[in-house]
Image (cartoon, rainbow, N blue to C red; front, side, top):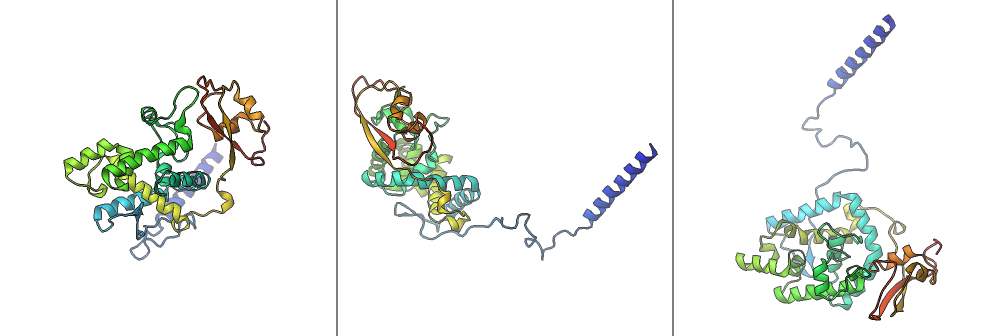
Length: 311
């Protein structure tokens, strides 16, 4: 028992000594503040220099306006220092931009709209809490309104080419209404009617002059921030090799104008399995296709040599 008391007393002395030593550490003075050694030597947080010439689809951002400066600065900071998300977006962009860029050109949309698609979905085939789906995050009703097939077998909101065509139709309609690609982008978030109503009530004709819902207030600035960071990753501290990025996998097309009773068996005919077939054709929602109308569908099949899994 006495030994235990002695041990506890010694521990108490050590603790008191530790506290005393800690209390003797000097607080940073005005001369040393900000010059302390960082906990991790290669990690620092810096204020960001505002880049020059910021524009969306060639339309300049009025950075001389202090409100615009603060809003742009916020999105640059948030998207720069959310490093894990930023790096994932850079990796996915390498995989999907080569698919999206020629489609934007084909449907007469400025190339900057690839950053809108990235902001919308992060290039993940997940349905949002509101029910928006696919790369362009269409709601079910909107997709059907613009002619996308959406049923138990097929959901063309997940079809990259067809959904991009529909997005282009919507955005060009908005551009015709507003005369501005920036407002067209904002209307993709708040709706053409919603933006029109705000502009009319406030008697303004610019996204940057309008007071819009909070999400729409940030929407175009987030797209601009992604454009800037994706275009200059090393400037914002993102370091990687080309081999670190996700790879675009080339495909060829197979046409189908009949019912398909089992896509697992269908996939095996092309040396792949059902999972890989779905990865390249997420618009196929079930393991079969009824196709009573004998509609012509085009299915993407990855070229040989990119997957090692067995059919």
